[in-house]
Image (tube, rainbow, N blue to C red; front, side):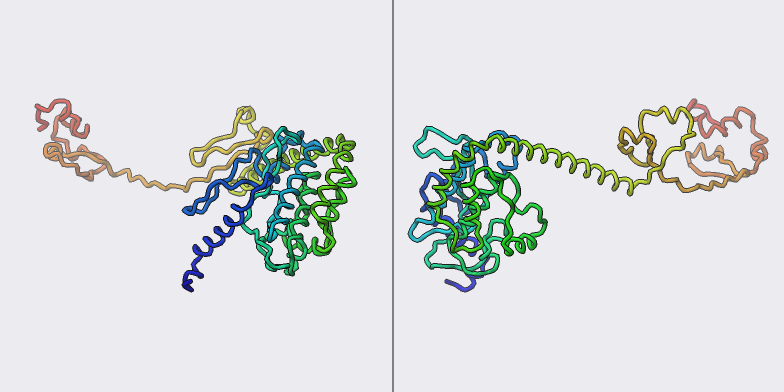
Length: 391
């Protein structure tokens, strides 16, 4: 291959896209999103339609907070585990390496169906997936540390067990509907938190389900369980969790209410921030309590032609914007000057200004009074009677 071609970013993007297509097109399973078509200009793939989008958005959507029964949670967890087990049992095994709730697509919200291979969730996005031709690999392909195993965060070698770790995070998200490490703001803090072996608490709905999470996100990859064992424990957790389903539903309702209150508080803070910025741009003053009744009875803010009116809150009627003061204008008027047209100017239709004395009669004392009035009329006589000459 031409060395220049290797350095071409478009060529690199094409090779990555081709590798994803080669892996995805070979996967045929009820819990894998089906690949339908491919486009190379632009680079795009067409998959089957998944009605409810990705799992991460669905978990934080309050419109669906009342559909999360324990049976649906176990069904989702089982579907994800089955799809992952299919990848790891291939020859050679396929490691997803970017397993996370945004890459889990949801097609149904019913825990049971009449189809032979009825599914609710399927795995998608195989852009970072690799075939495990070697026992271990190295390198970091994803920046977000939330679903990354500690061995990846520490830049060590790893195998497909990193997907089992990510599965434990997703199972935790399914029963909490919260963001993993949501109390931390910076990615570096999240990495330090996880590398020290810290994990958030697990709600006690089912002992078997909690045990699966603890084993999957174990710090040591060698002690993480097989996916067959995970499927067995999930089956046992179905009856255990149904006994605590009332507590689960109550928790989901509480979380939905907390999110709504948080959204209202954020909206109120944003309104106050915008109002504070407006106050810095346009100064506002408090009206004197002794102003006239007309001012106090005003139903709206005072407006000015110099600046546009500002919105005034209901309890803020006593605050008005102050328009900028116009600069003072000094106009000097000379009383000994006036403007008049000479008869010759009227006849020639020339517009010239002539300086005369305070007593204009010295210039026009020999003229009759009617003709004198016509001269001071600035040529109005010519418009009244065009056929009559002034002189």
